[in-house]
Amino acid sequence: MVDYTMAMRAQSIAEQYGNFTAQSEVTGKVIGKVDGRLTLGETIADNGGVKASFRAYQEYIKTHESKYTKEAGEKLFFVSMVQPYCAKLKDPTLQLTLTDSHPPNRFRVFGALQNNFDFARVFQCQSGTFMNPNSKCILWE
Image 1: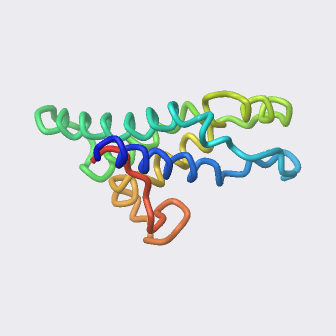
Image 2: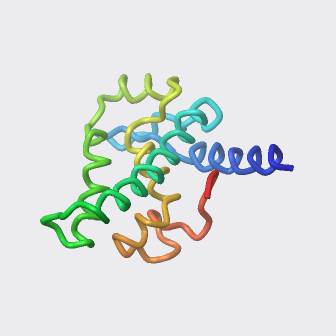
């Protein structure tokens, strides 16, 4: 039963990422779609990594003084997490990333944060919006 449940949850993540359409960051022309099955291992890792690292941050902050308010610190956590993925790609590079086991950077960010309840809370994303969809793909609680 556990294997079936995990398989269904993984399928949900594969479908979510498979719905992402990569567009040229220069012209807006459609380049292709993310292959949710090809990227599944990495997207599971991204989703779990965000959740685990935020929990670790919350535990750390309980015993270490911060110069930031709770709200600012939590926002800074997420901004710091996505900053390495901020880059514009030329069309040939974007097309090449669609054949890689890692989805294009923007979709690594979108997917992992769309599935993260803490992100939605911290940034007060309205329910049912792009960054806080009503249906989230959660592999681990």
